Image 1 (cartoon, protein in one colour):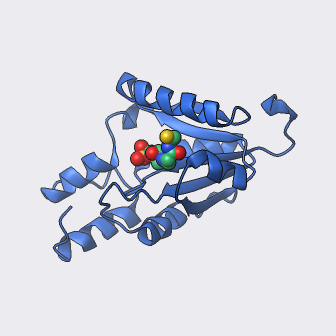
Image 2 (cartoon, rainbow, N blue to C red):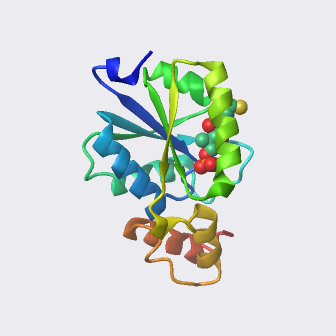
Amino acid sequence: MSLIKHDFTVAVCPGSFDPVTNGHLDIISRAADIFDKVIVTIANNSSKTPLFSVEERKQLLTEVTSHLPNVEVDSFSGLLITYISKKQANVIIKGLRAVSDFEYEMQMASINHKLNDKIETFFMMTNPKFSYLSSSIVKEIARYDGPIADLVPDAVESAIKAKLKENKPI
Ligand code: PNS
């Protein structure tokens, strides 16, 4: 099966997005330039204790992608590949920051290919200016009252500050 044969390409960009960073937004907006539709989907993964609820993460993602008309925000539980089939999507988009991301992402791409070889994983190199950036790093800086304005969209900065005011451990 060739991607070119699809009249309408739907890409799914999965992740925890706890919270969405400027690095995520860079990948999402570049994917939105390439594919007809991009579904940014939040994994409802019970093994992690998130700072933001799925609903809060959804609201933030919706707000920061509102200028991208072909981007939709959603969430899922269970296997990503099952969700992708349900959405009739063709492609999984993953951002790669550094070689350290590669091993894990290759394992994920390989297992997803084994589970459904009709769905392709596409990797995009993160803009080098975001190569050090992750949601965990943002939370770590915020926890110690450091500046995060250049790392996340304004709405996310405000939401993290609000969590700090609530004395929510981050
Ligand atoms: O932002 P993250 O935490 O690196 O995202 C990881 C995510 C959610 C993309 C990955 O854990 C995932 O796909 N989870 C769903 C379960 C699944 O399908 N796992 C792969 C096969 S075992």
